[in-house]
Length: 258
Image (cartoon, rainbow, N blue to C red; front, side, top):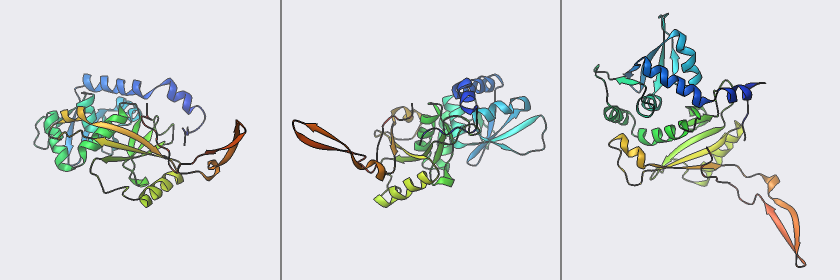
């Protein structure tokens, strides 16, 4: 589908302030302020000084929570966001519901208990975040995530992301599943991106298993009738050969997000 920027100057603004730089600034701030979040069910809550709210918003982590406090702004982090800041960026401490500081291993087990699919979803989330893609929930599009090239205020989401793991037979089981999903993505101007998580026989007892997980990226696009035609003829040795373009209903690309 390509990148669809929102308004004049959005692309230039994004290039002038890359997401990697913004996240690095947030990481430095959280480390210096010894930030900590409080576990609350399937999310984590933490407060940010008012003057730093814009930094968190620009980095696209969490969503604001309305409170009566004037000197702080509370944010709610999803499980993948909280673990990414804690485990991958090492800039956020997590305090459990028992008021104890959680280690990475304890937090991992807590989140696995809350959602069985957390290990593969987190691998997918961290895989894209490390490539500086911004991720938001894709539930309204029938996907797990939607991926933005930069801040959602500057650009439309480019991919609808589905996370699949070995042995997962719940989705995309038959041709009609592919057809419906791709049509939906096309209707909202998004490309379907499937992230297949291969665990390589690893268990999921500790977060160290993530190092052995392998992510395969594949984009799937709808067949275009305009491309499936006799586009040109090539004459070789007196024999007329027809070249057919767009013969395949789906095109697949590996490592498409760099």
